[in-house]
Image (tube, rainbow, N blue to C red; front, side):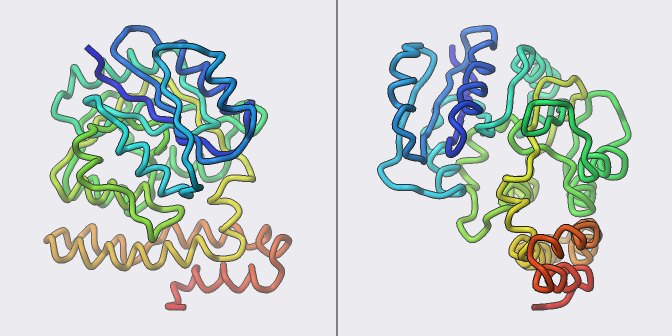
Length: 297
């Protein structure tokens, strides 16, 4: 019986997408299916999937470009199995990904999400250790190195302090995600937004340390491009303030206070001032300083 829907919302580099597909095809078992939803127009891609001729793979091409969030929701609409993975089209599953996730769900069957261990790679596939990833690992991620089940306000406090999850590597209970959906008004931080929705709905997160996924971090990502003009941080300020109000209304006052301060996001902006100056000049520097100060602009 099929259990895992591995979803690949695709747009961009053809070779990286093909590498991602091959990494999924290396998974064992017969309880999974790969569904690729193409939001681009690269002419050779449909023929490549047709030649692949693998019954474990479904391929769809959108008639019109839906954008990142629109394609996420399209993928979720197509999911039919109990769990789903919304994998990045430039990321890589290790051959042990599904065994690790299966073991976590066997241990914590009540979990709505599973975060396995992740390795970070650069645009060329080499191991990478950016400042953001070092901070995630050393300051924000739980210090317990063993498998654990996290939930409630304590998890919300942790994630509002600093989002240490790797969204493309997460395995989600399909029913929970279908009930929440990704927000069309958010372009970069929609992963944390839907996780907040799920926590408020009572879902829990299983964490297991075994590395089974490679997350690719490179300069052409959506989050990197928008950060230099301040667009990312304008969105972040709005999200954290709105979320603080929601958490307060829910009775999670400690998590609300952490969200209202959004310290990790402000520190991130501080660290990006030199790059913003090079990429966007005084406008970029001003955008970073406004976010560091927490100004309502």
